[in-house]
Amino acid sequence: MTTVALATTHRADELDADLVVTDLSALSALVTDDGVEITVRGRSATP
Image (cartoon, rainbow, N blue to C red; front, side):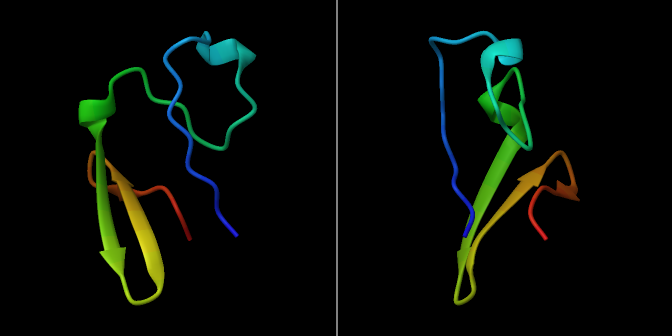
């Protein structure tokens, strides 16, 4: 299972995350039959 969280009240070094971006405009999310695919500036952030 993959968990996606958005946080604006914590510094990046306070987060326990597989991926941290400083600007949400760097992300794209696509819902597919297999789940949600998150892309960061052209590279897949999920397997």
